[in-house]
Length: 122
View 1: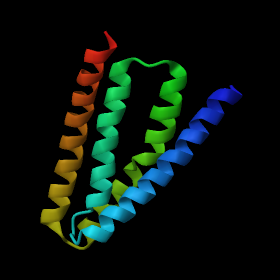
View 2: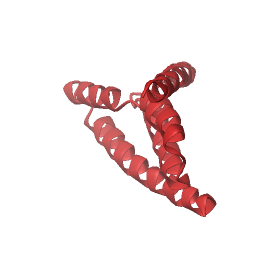
View 3: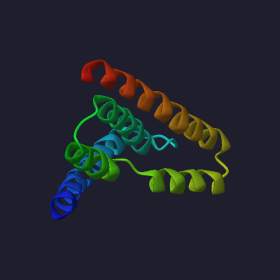
């Protein structure tokens, strides 16, 4: 049990740092009402989690990489907060684009990653 907790914690530490670093890098290079950094980390994380799942890795790898790294790397709560902020600012076009892209690309890339992982696991 302790090993599993440490794997999730170590992965979460890595994922949070990666998210922060990538988000800062993207935000310094983009000026958009669309929350590009959150969109990017969430759809990348969706793809990689699909890939990890499709690869059918051991439980310990899934805990470290899937639950730990990607659990901290992706950010559903930030996505929801940014969506609410766009709504309150009455930035309807960006709100709709952000919501549609987040869900559509997230699901499509998770599926694609899963399919790709399945090709390599057999």
